[in-house]
Image 1 (cartoon, helix red, strand yellow):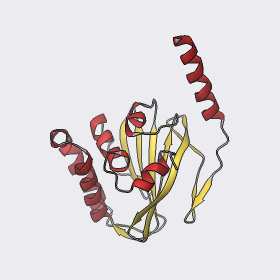
Image 2 (tube, helix red, strand yellow):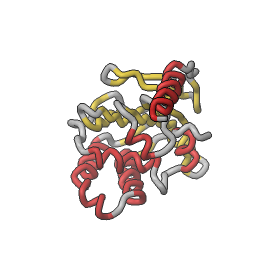
Image 3 (cartoon, one colour):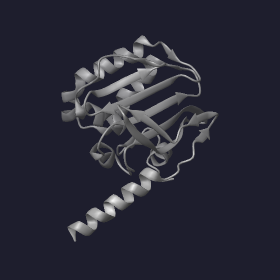
Amino acid sequence: MIKTLRTLFIAVSLCWSTASFAAVELAGVKVEDSISIAGTTLQLNGAGIRYKGPFKVYVGDLYTTQPVKSLDELIAAPGPKRLTMTFLREINSADFGKLLTRGIEDNVSRNEISKIIPGMIKMGDIFAANKAFVPGDVCALEWDPAKGLSIWAKGKLQAEPFKDPAFFRALMSIWFGHTPADWKLKDQMLGLK
């Protein structure tokens, strides 16, 4: 039974890793079918558009080493992961950082938040330093188990990587937690729609 399950898992993984994903275009943003981080090829898990009311804010895309359908699966997936946001409208980056903080607070218990406050302060400082994101600017959140969480904005690494896996999970809960910022985007990045 275990051997059969292992064979089935390997077969599904091979099918997913060799599947021919076509690059897609959303709101004028080309979303690649695969990327490479730290020598590891990641496949597009899903992509969608973040709306705030009637306005398109950014295109979000998620890359992983294997298909994931939930926050728990994302965290458990081996190897690097990347969530990218390509902005479609101008947004004050300090305000955006505050929205991210609120998203963490909506999805993480107070006890857990108390443990990640240093990371939240550091993240707030990163976004405050960038002033604004304009259409075409990219912000990427990359998790490499060997290094931690790197935040890239406008093509530049913003600080030393965050080493705390609990902070990475809290940050990912903004999009994939029980109270996501945008339910439709959550489903799209998890490949559910």
